[in-house]
Image 1 (cartoon, rainbow, N blue to C red):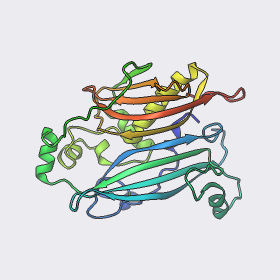
Image 2: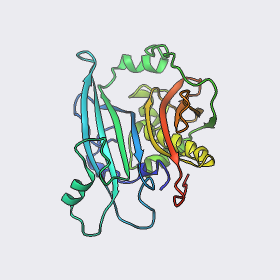
Image 3: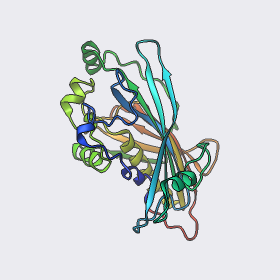
Image 4: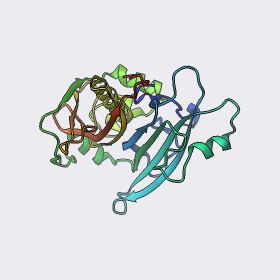
Length: 284
């Protein structure tokens, strides 16, 4: 399985009648008044072949909430929910309890029987008022961009323009009906964005896919990524994926970042790689 492709497997099977007004499911939602959500970042660790082989073998995903934090002053709180997903193979007649005890561990640092361990950090926020929506669309409430240190010269650089059809297809593949990716009027008039937003996990998929192609030329494969989404990426706007070896000289550690259409930092992270084993193929 190519790095990052695990994101399209095991989506929650929630009937349309049970979706929230914005198209999201309520499985991880803290409830009213925290109706808005964003994918803030996370991490992924790959073990062995990096995921189940795509040969018809059975696989399972065990999911749980590792952490919940409330941040911000009263009336402006944000709720951060840390979700962990573990992907592993499963025997034909293995019971649910047996799978859980084999795959899920008390500590998120332990591998257990997992082939992929993903941490998703979601943030839930209150609805914006009409004034806040207008201010957001005009840019009046946008704080100055923080100056963040990034490598001066990228060893890898690739520019992508995410289209509306790409956002639709990714939404379909991931069973994600969140309206900020599909409904331009909703994104503008309810959430206050200038256009449709690129999915947080799509940004992750693009980072992994772009970098793994480069790593393959070096005989390396991605073993982990930690990342943060810092600013929205908009449909039909340029996004540039960049990477450079860390300045500490480590051969298997890379800085990776995404610049938006204006050259601002939209996402950043750290990737670690390991040499490809002799009997391990590289799937980009």
